[in-house]
Length: 191
Image 1 (cartoon, rainbow, N blue to C red):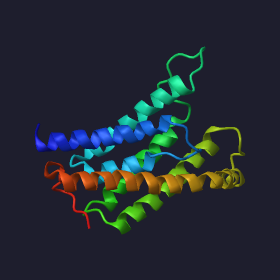
Image 2 (cartoon, rainbow, N blue to C red; image 1 turned 180 degrees about the vertical axis):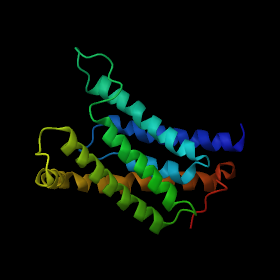
Image 3 (tube, helix red, strand yellow; image 1 turned 90 degrees about the vertical axis):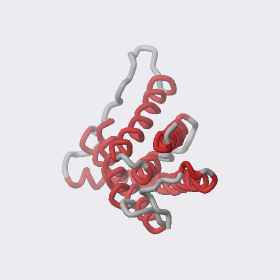
Image 4 (cartoon, helix red, strand yellow; image 1 turned 180 degrees about the horizontal axis):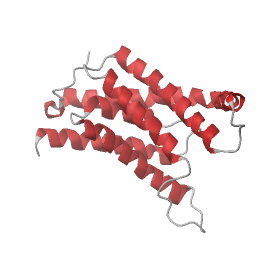
């Protein structure tokens, strides 16, 4: 296997494993989504891989969640759930954020900024989607503010899980690179 193919394969496996942790029981908003986006953005040499592989991993885990964990006997296969596009818009924005932040390398301060930024992006976009796509809130500024206020209790789990999963993903690949030189990524510098 070529070095790049090995790197891409290992990075993809790490992302898929992280994505499928979503099928395990967990508190609301405690997931590896932002970490997957940031990790892919930082590590893939080909930028289309940075988008495609994390989004594919998330979508595959969505398929399992929607068709096995939350399956209903009277529903056909659920390829996409209602309002999925708001979530996926936030995922794409998180990946763009990662590409911008990590374009010159990975550091603790950049990673911290990426985590906080990603948590904020997810909060703003997903709650905007709830406000825009449901009848739960009035379609005015007061309704939007109410929706954001209602989302605040879930923000803690988002931030905690983003820190945890980002640390695990970045840390595990850093350790793998230290042990196996064939996994070192030439375009990426850790500092």
